[in-house]
Amino acid sequence: MEFNSEFRINNYELERSDLTSISIPTLRTEVKEFLHLAVPLASAQVAQSLVGFVDTVMMGHLGWETLAAGGLASITFTTLLQTATGMVMGVSPLVAKAYGAGDKLRIKQVVRQGLWLSLVLAVPMMLLIGHLDKLMLQLGQVSATVTLADTYLDIMLWAMFPVLGFAVLRGLVSGVSQARPIMAIVIGGTLFNIVGNYILGYGKLGFPKLGLTGLALASTATFWGMFLALALYILIHPQLKSLRIFQTIDWLKPSLIRELLWIGAPIGISAALEFGQVNAVTYMMGTLGTDVLAAHQIVFQTGLINFMLPLGMSYAATVRVGQWLGKQNLEGVQKAGYVSMFFGGGVMVLMAITLITFSRQVIGLYLDVNDLANASIVAIAMPMFTVVAVQLIFEGVQRTAYGALQGLQDTRVPMLLGFLAFWGAGLLSSYMLGYSFNLGGMGLLIGEVMGIATAAGFFIWRFRQLISKYTTFDC
Image (cartoon, rainbow, N blue to C red; front, side, top):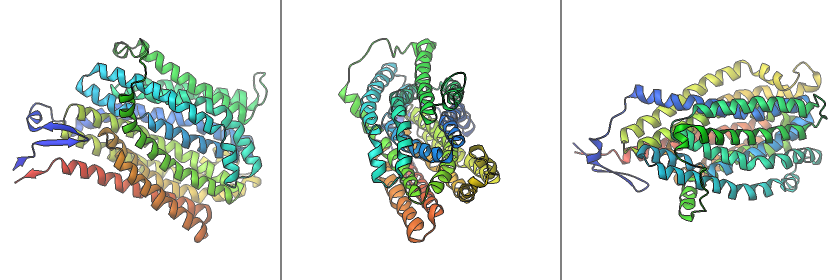
């Protein structure tokens, strides 16, 4: 047998002669390096999601009407935020590949243009968020709920740029295998947010009780603080300081912006498709009643925290696969991809079991489960947790598989596959099960799970297709 002499992914070539000059990674080494990145990145994502979790818990204690309105605003903002964040995610695989190739100049150029892209994207997103109240009314949401939600969104829109800028800087820091500071900064920001929410939301230490407005102010300040803290870390860390990211301001480079968008735009669209499916389900929940919407918000926010674990792992998968691509090591690419998928699915099995076992206790974090006024919400939310637990397992696999594809800079085909999965299998199933089969909120959630499971299968197939295509043997 003879190894095929050429390996090509997105016009990236690896000649056979290079294979003999690069190290072959062991499984144990890859697991160690993956966990070195995945643990702090996943921890940071969970900690960052606690900003929304804390908001939701405090919304619940302000009243279930506030919880419903805040939940509607939160999922809407999250959908737009994840879409915009995906657009700048091209920074991560490009930095990882440049780091693997030892190209410091390329790293600096990519990050600077990524920050410009963040600013360019933030402005129209802020304008869109500022006018979402009219759209929510047209989609059949209760007027009182929209009014409360709009109060929250009008403040949160100012967090758009720092969140995007943080994503760019995170792509730099994780791309050069320096992920632990991200975890520390995000945990610090989360603690600040908890205190700020308590003071401003409930009116403590002499401040007026601002409710949703106070929660939004604290969260916005938190996002700005995390962005500035990570920028400061880059300025003082010896290795990162040598890159001189902030020494001068580069003007927009259309060619590099196009390259970032060539990779990032499909990621953003894919995020819009996935979160758009969740958003659509949330709006459909709203048509079934405020109690169903409030129950779904509890389940959604809890699932979102768990979702952050595979999301953080997917960032590690992108970096590891991208670094091996930069080193022109095909076996490293394979092992990095499969290791990430194994951990993504395995960890979420454990989280699913935990969620099912302690679902009533989790609901108790948001509402008083012994209060008869909340009985209908508790009754609706309990079975929803079982469905979401199953969803998390598929989520763990599909997110890490998608992260591996990003590392290969393969984003356009997965975008199309995501459309078929989330808006074909998923949203169509939600509508039919929820309305045609009269399963209500449970039917809507089951359809959502079907979309995520389909995406997981598609992304694994795509990764295997790429790898098998470029590791053929001629007998």
